[in-house]
Length: 254
Image: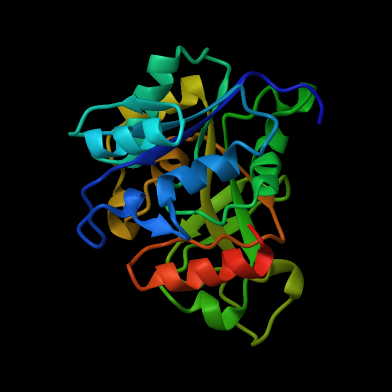
């Protein structure tokens, strides 16, 4: 890949979760989930550092036991993005460096997706890119679910809008596959300066309505470049997802 600025992967790992307390430490085929996510992210060769960012001594102890670098952060962060920002500051991330928020519940993460995420920042044409994320094609049937966040793009593959609604809406039926629905994949890469700005901005009206924090960027004129991938992500949202993830790991020998 063409030259990149320094890149850091930060995995927020919060112990308390209303739906799944202690999720970062749940064992996935005998390995704590946060450790598995770190192992997967560390396989991407483009990062200067890959670290966990947590608020809990139990997670710090597990990281130490598995020789995983980790940073202790404040307990009162409102979002994983805020925790990532604190960790990036602790790492001394430069203003033009790229900070990737790697979701801590993706133990089957494909490292190639991280390379796709970083690609918009590469080379001279990437100098103006502030934020990037991923999307992947999805069926119109799946797009009907408000739990699946959709994104529509402009001609330069910048996000026009993210929504829980079925966008783009096809008035005439099946529509053109070229503008079929795209599922947003919740991996983000920020220039450090853009991450600082994002965290300082108040919640926007669209963000509060859709409950999607990335809309804060669009409402404030900060473009989001979207890399379209054919790869899939497999997250763990609830305890019942663990069995499914372990099946995927066995099948793909991950």
